[in-house]
Length: 393
Image (cartoon, rainbow, N blue to C red; front, side):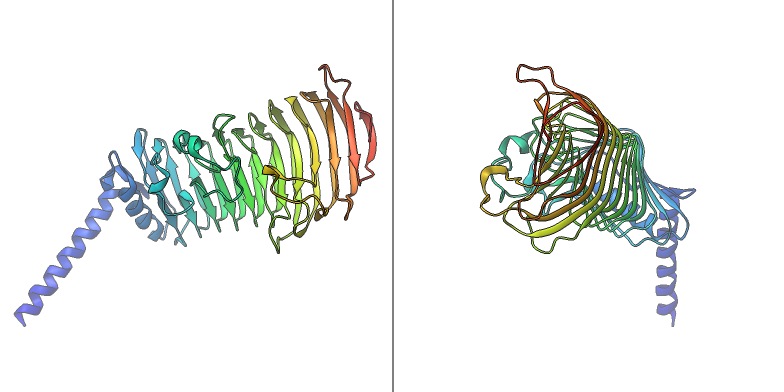
């Protein structure tokens, strides 16, 4: 009997210590990683703070204060019992060596409802070494490098004021998300960095990218299959490859893309402007209800492109046309300067021509030696209205 009493007392005392430790680590719903022992490497501290915050029945915040920290690969998963915020005010540095990652991401948020990622902080992927060794600009089957941040199956989320820098691969990948907003978000990487798309979206609905600044070595924003209701407003893009829908039709059973709205953006010194691209001779798909409006181009190569013969690395066949159906597309009030003489190129599929394509008030100036500006159209009969500075279509 005495033994049971002693054992019970020990268990109760241990529980009190655990509760006291948790209470000390958090104050007013704020779980500070430095109170969990986080100093130079905060991986374990962040994991523990996240677990405690996620278990809270009241809205909670995990705080990474100002400072520079190392962070190894981490998954921050739900479901959580209430709304949760990760406030990053410090600089987080990823491992330099890609071999230290077991899969394709550095920081992965999964299955969280009411997630906020905020703060003045930076996710630094330290990608320079990885880019120098990458073969992804030549080999479509290259081994994938880790992305800086993944959002998998997030609902009702907000990402604001955060910076992602020098990712080894895509900076951000959005998959299976609903109602996720990026606001005052910054992506920065050199123009020569390989495969470093700013934000890639796939199989997601209700994604908003607002008043953000993206400069990188690949697409500023890329749209994969299954994306619906994407709204891009007030984005500055460059350097990079522009804002792209696709590439589509590379894999079997791709889901349709619909409801893409890109408005009031500025694109500067990029390899493309606004672009829709699909692979030839592979698989079917559909992309519709896509609208690009009020866009300024500054020294942009290929400002307006539909490319249904997209074939990077020359590792595909052009013998058969693309099987992706493109329809209900508009380009309106697009103005500025082009670095190439062809300012509008609509190269649609010979098997399934584009339908319901509109060009309105296109005022793009090319002042190079190959001028004047011109447009090229194949397998499409666009409706043209207002200003059209480039003849040909």
